[in-house]
Length: 310
Image (cartoon, rainbow, N blue to C red; front, side, top):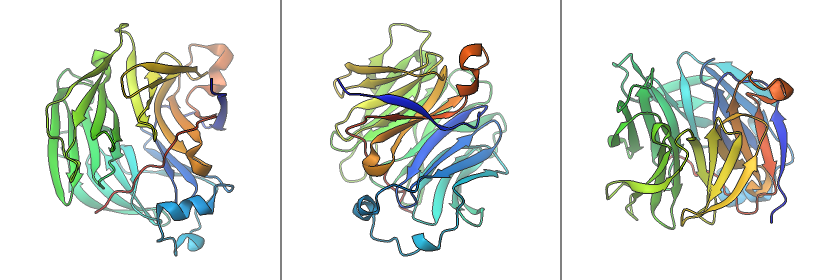
């Protein structure tokens, strides 16, 4: 049995905290508050530079970065997903498209528009894949059934790879097993796509990976560790569930945040699991924790997110 410990990483109470991303070249966690159109970051000073060198040798500009220890930036539109490009840039998924974002100057340029002519849809979950692609889901602003989609941007081309979803979430990847996972929170189900070994593109129709018996369970954001286990935030249930590649529940970690939204590995050697959450005023005893970013220590098999390749 692993010894897990849950603590508050950042006490800001987000209305809808989402898309935690550990930037391994900057020792910094980024996340967003979707409802407040705000990008947050918090730098951790004690992360290992030796570990960073195993991620990328292009770190010549890191010492010149002047990002504050804790920072927040209001965005012009709704940012729902984040990936990293290099030491200077992030990739942002928004309700108007995918952008390259300069971290220090807070400037951005459009990479490609997605559903920007559809005012009733917005982006939702997103993540970089190990081949350098960026996946971004969309949904109806009122979560109308069947209006959600998943797109993949790769080598300057955008492709819609999944349709007829409602609340698409949980995008994550297992390169050794050539798998992509995603959830539809409406169906209480996790789905799996088989991927091409050379390009990372889906090469078969999705099939059911895991279905919760309790249809009130809303699977949300998810990340895959180095052993292929899925670490899933379960909205409304106040827990993170770890599932094996064979779809067996390994761990259920109870946390004080009632509405956890997404997970991300980070810290020195990716030994922490960060969990964003949404505000909930139901439980007065833990009201101060709702909407905060939590960290879970004791992770043995975390791994850093790969960069997007443009």
